[in-house]
Length: 195
Image (cartoon, rainbow, N blue to C red):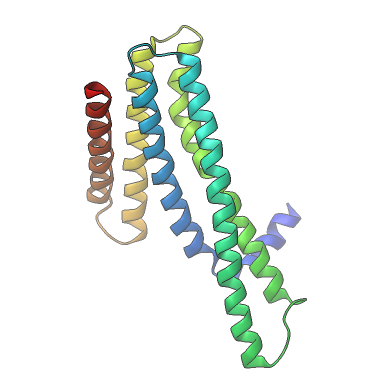
């Protein structure tokens, strides 16, 4: 607990909040839309296999988590390194072993870990109906429709939160994100049906 308190204090001045929000929202939408595509492509195919659906959802979410975690870490390290270099030039002093440099490293790590976890959280929510289908509680198609509903609910909730954070109408923002999700689903479903 004490380490968390120290970490929170060291991150306070590192402007981690905007980066965390920006990358989290991007990754949440990417992962949820990706999961919609996986569900459409595997659960609504002619001969769906529940184990393939679940395996594909987990592996793609893990791959996206690793990809976004690493890319965000590198991008944050680069940007924070540039800022520290500018401060060093202004101060005519090396800041490698200072609280400023340590705070920048911790901020990059926290933001990248949050982005690594985001697709896994999205997957954990949308995979629940398929876990029930594996147990024989639900039929595969029923599980797929429920999972689609969960994915759309994630998009709507994220839109509402974005609306509140941006002092916009949260319900309108939520409906807008929901609309994009429905559009992506319809396009993907039509492609699956036509192929």
